[in-house]
Amino acid sequence: MMEYQAQPDCLAGKTILITGAGAGIGKTLALQCAQYGAAVILLGKTVKKLEAVYDQIQTIGKQEAAILPLDLNGATEQHYIDLADTVKREYGKLDALVHNAGLLGVLGPFTQIEKNTWDEVMHTNVTAQFLLTKSLIPVLSLAQQSSTIFTTSGVGNAGRAYWGAYSVSKFATEGMMQVLADEYENSTLRFNAVNPGATRTAMRASAYPAEDSSLLKTPEEIMSTYLYLLSDDSKDVTGKRFNAQ
Image (cartoon, rainbow, N blue to C red; front, side, top):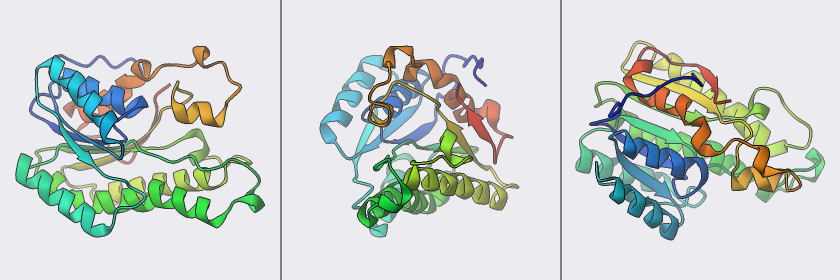
């Protein structure tokens, strides 16, 4: 899907919630979705960053965005239930959910992983996605067609030394996607996963501090796969893993 050409307004009339929307891939995707006509719900923990993205979307002038501040590592199940109620009340449905937010943790030998690091990575990358998806499935079911995109990684289907908790969390992410896709195979809900690949983001820089980031793809250059999965062109595609590069 790297060569996919999105049609103008291919997301018109859709409401899309993106986690980690304040920076990196999430920010770029939010702006792209707005450009293609979607009403975007920006979810993240840093209000100032979300407000900056909101302001940029306002200049596009198609649909007004919304901000939902939420710290995935500290939110309770009730927070997600309340969030779903808010989305249903304000929009009537949800056409797409993009799980973009993630936590890298600390890279190093398995035996040196501290429990609090393990717990934080698993909570943000797995438990929070479980709770958010669970709460929003009834709202996603109200859309004519809905798409949920999980973010995976190259270390999410082939374990890599020293990637510890992050790698394990991405295996769990892919498993969650596959379970949901199988459960809802004969429905209007679809679930897929995208591996962004080596992209010029803050998380990539923290994992590879000595890397020449100018050699990496920018978030803008990997958007076609996301746009394909968010559009109705992928309405029959579920349970798949896509590489954005």
